[in-house]
Image (tube, rainbow, N blue to C red; front, side):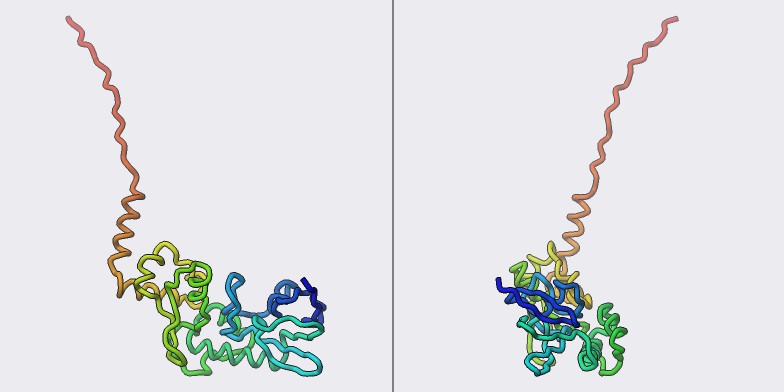
Length: 227
């Protein structure tokens, strides 16, 4: 493949054609924050926290690095006054939905974000799409999906699929930055197939219950003295 040399944070970085700026940075050990990115999934660009400053042919632009392809001689800045301001506002917007997300709390400290700047909307989901995309792209099950659009967009588990697929999987829970995926699944379970957990728990306990084996000991015969 064709090798491309670009500059990231005053360092010359070599990348292969077809890579994104985020991939090139990660390969070089340069940190760019992300929330919706996962190496096993197609780039999404939903959270926009990986925004960077790119200078090319005298023009400066602000791009989502997980989608922006590397190009020869471009200059990338992962931190600048404007980049930090953009990330600060993005974190504040996301914290209106999930103010206690550990990842967002950490970013808020880094960029001086005010968790109370925007009115709270207790959805606890930041629409990163990790659960939806992982289920669709990796597991090929389509048990969770986006519903509706705009300000009312949300993720939901599809009961007919989730009932058969999610109990033995639940891999998307660990990917969720806010724990909303697990809560959404438990709500679906409680409403759509409430008896499954009880049945599975009983079956698990029965399978785990050790068998008690009572050994049969030989009883020695005792003779009686005749006097």
